[in-house]
Amino acid sequence: MLDEATRTAIFKLHEQGHGSRAIAQALKVARATVRQVIRSGHRTVPPLLRAERCEPWREQILELHAQYQGHLGRVYEELLKSGASLSYPALTAFCRRHRIGSAPPPPAGHYEFAPGREMQHDTSPHTAEIGGVRTRVQTAAVVLCYSRTIFFQMYPRFTRFECKAFLTQALTYFNGAAATCMIDNSHVIVAAGTGAAMIPAPEMAAFAERYGFTFVAHEKGDANRSARVEAPFHRIERGFLAGTQFHDWTDINAKAIETCEAWNAKFSNKLHASRRELLAVERPALIPLPLHIPEVYQIFTRIVDAEGYVHINRLRYSVPYTLIGRTLEVRETIERIDLYEGPRRVATHARVQRPLDTRVTDPMHRPPRGFGHQLRPQPAPEEIELLTLEPQLARYVAALKLAVGSRRLPLRRLLSMLRDYPREAFLSALVLAEQYRLFDLDRLERMVLKQIAREYFVLTPTDESDE
Image 1: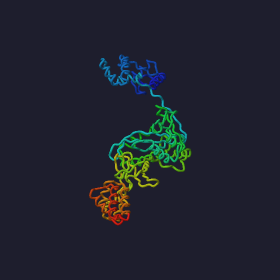
Image 2: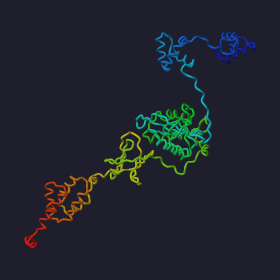
Image 3: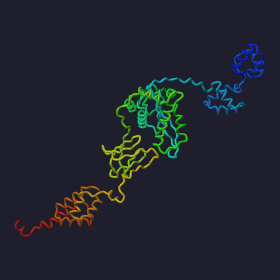
Image 4: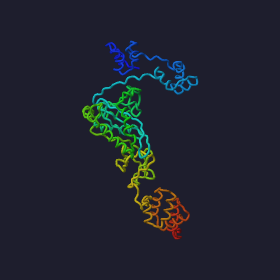
């Protein structure tokens, strides 16, 4: 069918007195077609009037479409059972032409952003090959709306801790912050409400206040409002992650920064400049960073287990073996694990993301080989003094320790008895106590006193007559 421009040319040449043969040769169309157009007398393309195969089934299509909630495959199966002779493409084309189950998309809006006015932040799930394993990652991205400068990183999860750490990296990369940060009602930042009624979580609002910007959210369903950051996710998936292998999480994020540098430095025909050049124009309008940018970390309290490790997020990090049983403060940053005993840092490890249940061990935290005896409990001072004063007490003291455990009070009382009573009477009573495995020190003391009474307080008959 000839288009309107060709039909108009036919009528124009016909009005100039040219015959159908000349018109057909000039426009490269058939003479019969030229005559048909001239006879019709219409310059516009006539509507195509022909019966549609699906028209007799229109009412049933509408009914089945509502019954199966728009599933055209099920609608087509039921139509065939009812005796309809039509193809599935004919059904879908009929539904598109008559707007059954679909509406024409509304035109997208156009937004103008002044320098430093807005930045947009969002996350998207992707799959990357890290250490030879296909791994689910959360891609976080921030884009300055005026210059289109992008910064993105990858995380195994994305909580408020990762969000604050990521935004700190992004603002440092931009060397400033825009006045507002547009988000998509993410629960990571939002405490309540959506769109204009969104209320950010207190810790996220405090974070934004530190850097001088505010979080705002677009209305639900209005994804075009954050198109500056939504559009690059496809490029990240197809242009950065596809076909690339990464050694670990540090490697993937280091290459992400390299990719940001390359993309931001590349000349854009659409922008008529590179994003880096536009960033230089936008930077004076950005909110300057504070003088001091504190490192983002979260705090845990952990007790060092019997093997000399602390547990963080199903990962184990070693500490010096001398701290076994102690309570430590753990500070987890995006790159490190710092362990503190009071105000002093006692250990530092590189933060591990995966796999879970990994043990991160510093060889300096283990005891030297061949000196395992140093890990055994050292004898109490009372025990050392007891054996120094009287080596014969070694077996009884060892048996007493097994009976009373780690308590030092019995050893202290035994030492006091050794000092206070005559040595011969004390050792004599101790031999009987060791023979009968007597560890009741009250009875042992009575035995000593009874021995002393027999040996040191004997009354003679002369003394009795004098009384």
